[in-house]
Image (cartoon, rainbow, N blue to C red; front, top):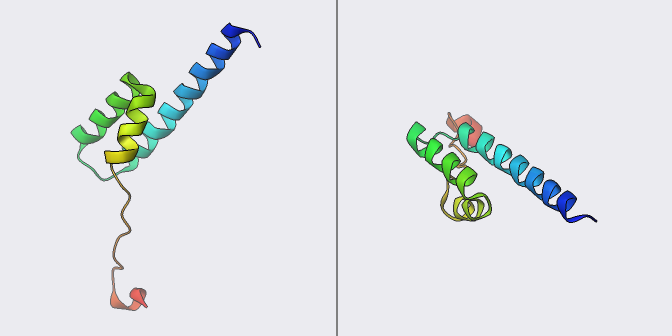
Length: 72
């Protein structure tokens, strides 16, 4: 495989993962500044940003049932 092709494929994969993570971060219920900060981090430091976000970033929490009937 040619080196330029390998670099190109790697960059496309990194960009796609960045976009996927950004979409997930935007869906979170964290404050707007927090979400934009995480998105900036993952785009400025792609692989390192992914690792930091995975360890410290917003977590999806299951919400409690709205009524006691749904908790059964």
